[in-house]
Length: 71
Image (cartoon, rainbow, N blue to C red):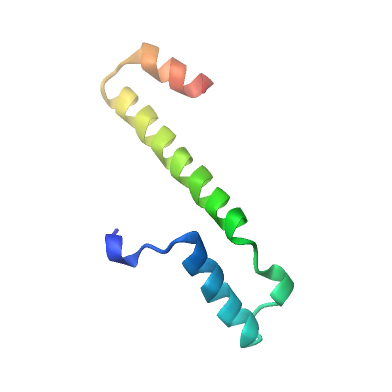
């Protein structure tokens, strides 16, 4: 992914507000910036966890794999 293509939570909410202003989506469907930031944080943590699990599996590190799956 190109780092210049990344959006902040604020950028995402602003884009959603533009869509709401244009009638594409309902204004009530535009989340708060903190909500979007929370989604981004959870998604990033999920990707990091999955990456760690895959690395543990590649290295045949069974002990680490068990720990990550319990996490």
